[in-house]
Length: 591
Image 1 (cartoon, rainbow, N blue to C red):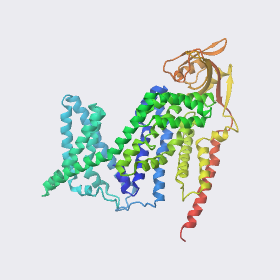
Image 2: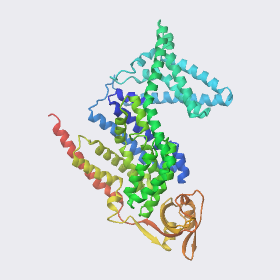
Image 3: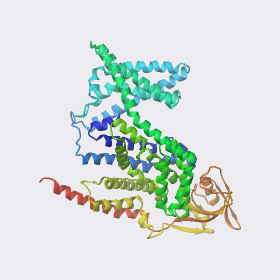
Image 4: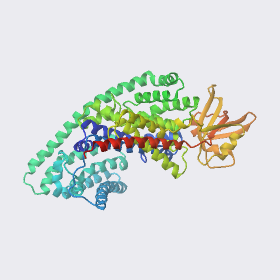
C-alpha cells in the first residue's frame, strides 16, 4: 500500500522502496510493541518488559523522527510541492477528517475482533464458519455502501494531482480492511499458525478482487455485468502473476542467505568470530564495537528478527560487556543487547543480501542493489545510535533522573539526530559545504556523547574502596546503576577481574539489602566484602558474577561540572551553520 503511494507523490522508485524499508525495520525497535525479540530480551537481560521499552524509547524516537526529516529533505532537494487542495479546510475540519479515517478503520478492526471473540465463546466448534459468514455479510454491506463512490477506485494507478476527499475515499474502499481483520481474528482468536492465518486472509482478499467489480455493477444497476465479472477475473490473474514475478528476486536472495547461514552454523565460524574480535580490537573500544557490528551483519543475514537476536546476543553481547570492562568501560547489559539487536536488524537492509530491500524493490519495480544502498544511507542513523548509547548510556535513560533531565536528553538526542542527517544528506537550508558538514558532525558528537570532550578534562567517576563501598551503595539514589568491580575464581578455575553495572533497589541503611535487587547476597569477611550467593537468572548472574567473588571497589559520580554543559557550544556551532546557509539562500533569491 505504501510504496506505490510514495511513488505517486513524486519520489523515485528506489527512494520510495528505501523509505519503506527504513520505516519497517525501525518498527522492530519502536515501543510500545517492538518485535518478538523484545520479549526474549526480557529473559536474557533479566529486566521487566517496561524497562526494555523505556531503554529503547529515545533511540527509537530519534530514529523515526530522523526518517521523517530525511523524507522532508529529499522533497526539498527535489523541489517537490504540496498537492493542491479542493478547498482550504480549517484546522478543526482537518482534525475531524483525520479522526474520521482513523476511527473508521479502527472501528472495522475492533468490530471484527469483538464479533470473533463472542462467536468463538458461544460456538467454539463452528466459530470459523460463522465468522466467515459474518465477514462475507460485512463485505457485501460495505461494498453496497461504496457503490456511489466507486469511481474513486478507478484512479488508483493514476498520479495524484490533488488531495482526495477523505470521506468518499474512505467509504469507497473500507471493505479492503476486512482481510486485515480476518488475519487478526485467525491469529488471536482462532490461534492458527501465521502461515495458515495469512493463507485465509489472502484467500479472502482474492475473493474481494474477483467479485468487487461484478457486485458493484449489480448494486449500481449497470448493464455490463458479464464484462465486469471478466475484468474482475483478469484483475485476479494479473495480481497473481505480478506477485509471483516480484517474489523471484526475494526467493533468490533468501536461498543465498540460507547458504550463508548454513555455512556459519555447520563450520562453527560464529564462535571463532568472538575470539577474533578480542584479538583484532587490541582493547580499543571503538574498534571492538565496529568489529562486533560487522559480525552481527553477517550473523543476522537472512534470519528472521527473533532468530537473528538469539544468535547475535548469544555470541556477541558478552564480548561487548567483557572487553569493555577490561578496558575501563562498564557497558550495561541492556546496552550491549540493544547494540547487537540493532545491527542484526541492519542485515535486512544492507546489500548484497538485505532481504527487506529486495522485497521492497520488487514491489517498487526498482533495482534491488541500488535500493539497498539508498536504504542503508537512510538507515545510517541506526548505525550511529548504537555506538552512542553504548558509550553514553544516558541515551537509554540510564542514569537519567527527573522529568527535566529526561526532556533535556530527549531534545539533545533528537537535535543530534537531525544534525547527523543533515551531514549525511549534505543539506540543511541549502546544500552544505564540506566545512559546514564537518562543523555539524562535531556538534553531533557533542550532543550525542558530551563525555568525549568533558571526561578528559574532569573524570566523571571516582573510585571508592574499603568501608567507603558500603556507604556508597547505601547512599546511592533510588534505582541507581552502581559500577561494581570484583575479582575471584570462577567455577572453571579461572582467575578473573570483573566490572559490572548492578541496579540498586530503594534507599536503605543496609547496603546488603540494596544489592538484593540485582540478585547479589553480600557479607563482610576477613578479606573484605564477599558475594555469598547469586540468584539464578538475576542481573548479576547474567553479567558473570559468581559466589565467592570479592567486591574490590565501586565507582560513584564525581562532583565535576555536568557533561550537559557541552550542549551550549554544540548549539552555537549549529547556529553558525544555520546563519551561513540563510545568508546564501537569501542571496540566491531574486530581488
